[in-house]
Length: 149
Image 1 (tube, helix red, strand yellow):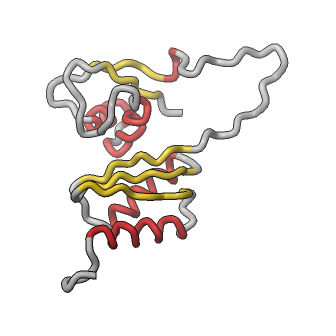
Image 2 (cartoon, rainbow, N blue to C red; image 1 turned 30 degrees about the horizontal axis):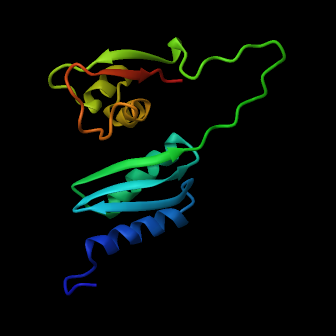
């Protein structure tokens, strides 16, 4: 502890510990710190739990940027009836393609498609193959926009 209170890394670790014990539906939450940028990793029961963990972390720690790399557990599916066909991993009806325009952000795109800018992580997660940071999208990129269920 410094003379002015807890260090940034101590605050981050304390927040991670609180969230791990909180019963929010996130397991093995951990944080990687680079300067004042924190990357959260772990395993969440659902997208809602993932979002709640990020929200609670940001209430406790003031960062320059918090990157949410918490993975969501694969949801258990009902058994497939005999003779039924399984859809492909990303059937054409599961998402649509959007080409990034000048001035776009994932928040603006989420607002346009979902009516809520705060749903941008859904777009980011669907495009992890082409995006490494939700704040770094490029004009002309073609992004998958998952349909809300």
